[in-house]
Length: 394
Image (cartoon, rainbow, N blue to C red; front, side, top):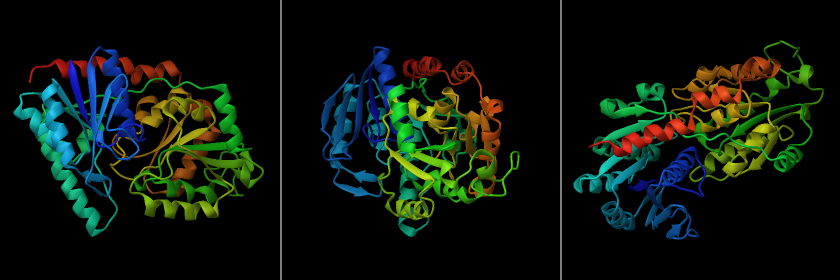
């Protein structure tokens, strides 16, 4: 089967959405499907036409607006490529996704939308206008789709846009292969982290929806000298003897698109706690297992519905690492399904610190076997189900 996938940002750009899109493309190729990725040339250094196990065609943007693009080339290439393929997969959110979706319906092709998340932009008139335009575009794409795939029923039940197409929505846990660790990389990362008794991990790009500031603001609570073993606040006296023995280690891009103002905010906080914060930078997906091996707990402090699941949670769990995650639709599901962690309210540094302490003080209680986690979030099962959508009649 010939499949065309429409996505705004694709590899080498790193986000949960682009990682999912890449895994899906690789998995479909392994099922003997022919796959083409239609994406934007978000970096002028990237080739317009690239062949791997799948083909990548990049459209040249005319104008960049926030994280989106306007592109006449996108319209031309959408028409050209949709005509040549049997099925269109659109990765949403995507302001330009309705264009190939419309062409596909006009040509009698099957359209599958994957609804990764809803975008919630910071306050401001410009951001409000951008969000309205994006939501209108996404709604049109959803209405043009034959089936809409999302990560969890929990997220679907709380999504404003998905309610409009509820009869089309199916929930499938995302494709997450079991990570692997390299001894040499583990040693490298541990050297970068430095001496520490407690390592708190964050696997995320610097973006406002990730809520990283709430974890940084929890540092004084984690360092509280009042802490005693079993005390819900502070781990300094029970697990550490010096302030620099607690480290928050952030793995992910530090200069993501459209997050300049948020980065300034985070870096101002980092200056206050520079002994406790380490940036490892962008880590290749195949090396993330080595990162998880270096941490005691993974924290996902996201604050809004732009975060719909958190692939990194399951990856960490597969490596035996417990998680503290925000109580958001979809995001809370991995912890609820596995019991490997604690779910906390959003934007609450005090409760976040208490949960981190609770997990660190009781590691065995929050750990499950890799087999249990992989059975719940089955990589093989994902592709078995997805193939059914590809082959179904319109």
